[in-house]
Length: 361
Image (cartoon, rainbow, N blue to C red; front, side, top):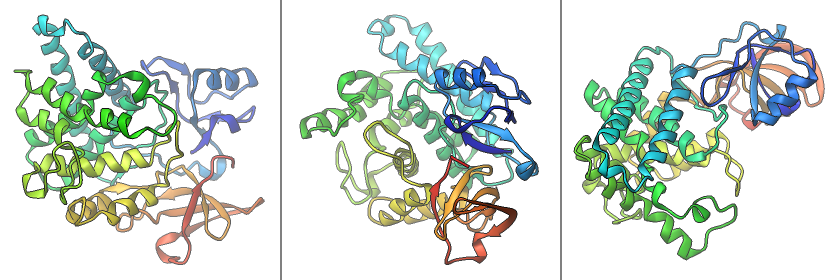
């Protein structure tokens, strides 16, 4: 199977996976042959990518460290948590607060369990779900990356679940920001950026008041924008003052932020996001965490169509687990010309690079 942008779907293509909305309701079943009407409905729902079946890619296995249902469940819990935490009367309802935190702890525990059962490297967490808010998807992605890194460092189970919960809540302070600034489509002014930076303090103050949470969870919100050289915020502390959870989370947070499309800028390619991390290694980030990220995260998931530096186009067929940014590509086109398919191992063709993610073919 392969991934294709919904806007390039054609009548008669066959779905390889069911399509669900944010709440887990199936919109279109797998194996359905697409009609013009269905394609239009998918576009109307805001679905940007789908998996389709074809003979060229039938043997390509799409793997995920966590189930799509769990991702949707996590998204819904985050969305509901943000809504509840924005309620000024929440502190007067400790039962509701406790229930919300319990549900998030359950999500973090389940994500940790599913990732631990995944023998292969964790696939790049693409933004393939319908999402009405960047912050919700970002929180889930950062949690997945953070859990995978904590497991790579062989943290005890209770710490893996704890850091996963901290990552789910790391941006909770954005609930208390002016929404017109948080969702601004253009460049922020200096004053607006200073307001945005306050989300770390707001999140810390809110979470530390909860008797249901360890104080470390509040520090995840407080410190995830700190840097080991003291260049971060809100306090400008250095590495020896940062909690290990925050050091890991800062790497996951930056990678997901720069590789996700926003209204004011296009996403970087995954390997470009990795280059950002390496540029900051031993300055902003601890180098051993960046190295672990590269070993743990498969940057280009199976089924994704990519453009190579020599103008060939193909589909990621399988991973090279020692070099996660150089997978095996099933070549389908030389430029615009369709060719008989063959596999190209980028780990053996070091002069060829992935230069784009092509969703037209």
